[in-house]
Length: 123
Image 1 (cartoon, helix red, strand yellow):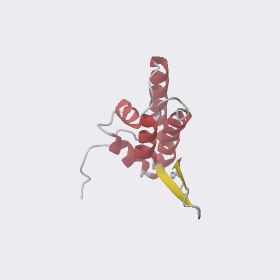
Image 2 (cartoon, rainbow, N blue to C red):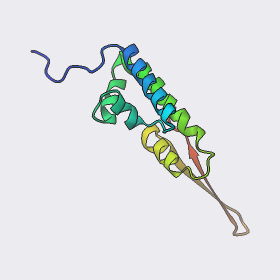
Image 3 (cartoon, rainbow, N blue to C red):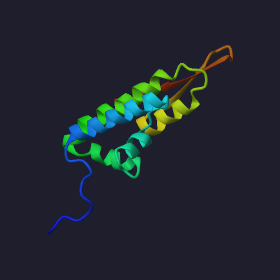
Image 4 (cartoon, rainbow, N blue to C red):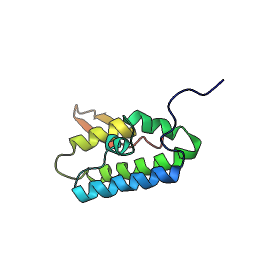
């Protein structure tokens, strides 16, 4: 049976990596943020799912993890800036980060609530 479907956009992970580095250099020179969707579009994909699909290909797995980690690092570094709501959303949506809320009740009817954001990407 003949293979059907569109041919792969990238056959060589090194070519994809080079194109990704081009994206990072471009965004840095423009002073614009790195995004997963922006990277996918720069690589010539129609959406981020196409990039994610490449991560399931053995020879591209490391490359995709490495370039997505560059975006994640960029976003993590912005968590200490004034309004980081968009950064938090991006980390949750694209990298599996989650909110964790802990409630501590004491016998004297006082309560302590702590909300933290945790990186679950290594789980």
